[in-house]
Length: 103
Image 1 (spheres, rainbow, N blue to C red):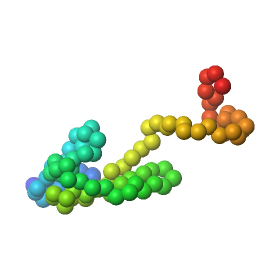
Image 2: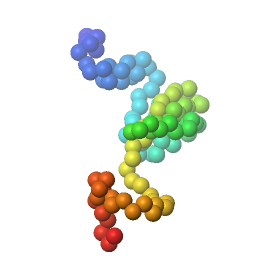
Image 3: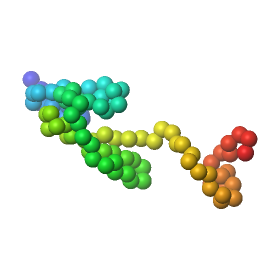
């Protein structure tokens, strides 16, 4: 029987979680559900801390009050909403941004 040494680290960690016993997680299901239920036990008794942001990523520590599991939700930028357009006359093309149609 293999001791897992030939598996990539992520696969070895996932295998340990399953072999260690209690839970098998489905990350895609958790994400599709909008992160509303614990990915370990399915409880909706989860709480998150404030969202932390650095220059290229954002994440939030989340924990389950039912099974005491903890994880990080990781966020990625997929859209923007303009709330106010500034009056800086700099041409966006000079900064490497394409000009929107009709401007």
